[in-house]
Length: 333
Ligand code: X2X
Image (cartoon, rainbow, N blue to C red; front, side, top):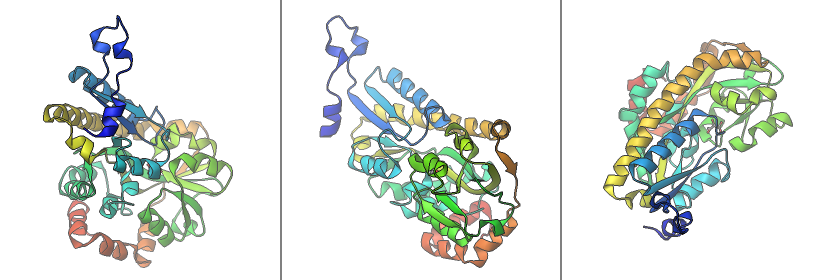
């Protein structure tokens, strides 16, 4: 066990006289940070997993969740999970790619047609390829990726009907080289900001637009500061549930098994939650005043192709990873 784990496992309530034995301090007390509001399925299902883990380990493993950027933005939490300051983090593939470049491969523009393709790839060889790369930087990635969703664009001033409307659009994107490259290739003027800054940057008009899956637009109330939503489905994005490698390796195998099973099974349920939300959230957002349109993908794809986006990223990801992606989604470039 690392010094940090030992320190965070200092007994608290457990030593108070008269407390029942079950309230003793956990042997392994872990922090899990993420960037989403408590109401998002990622947090609902993680809390379920944490409760199940506490129960099945008889209180030996405790996971405390710090949602909504309480521990800082994505960049901060990525640094913390690398140092062991926190044990668990769920970065989007876009964000962990700042450390593990190939992790952004699922986010190549307009690659996935539907969820059947997504989960076949991410639970299959492409996901394995990315998990191996994450393992090489001292982090452990759990087997089942969690869903963020297909990303959609929202704007404040004008509706996006086709790729021509992207020209000069001041759009916030995550801290992600692929997102910057893709939106530049579309003619937009992208800025990377951590998620914690998105609402206020739209409100104060530092940017005019952002892009996120509908469930996030809902739970983060972005409809309050945006008028239009183009359901472009331009990127499929998911969250890798990752652990600080040495802390994970220091957990006895029987406890590892309980934790991994609970997290992976919660992840599969979370995928179902997002799928369900995708079917209902649009009506709710419309009722809240967001005007929807559904632009056809062709003009966007053509602009990306003509501006060399696919050729560039094929080179950056390498032939092996690109071949795995194309075997899942068909020829891209
Ligand atoms: O920052 C975002 O836009 C979010 C919440 O989708 C990610 O985590 C990439």
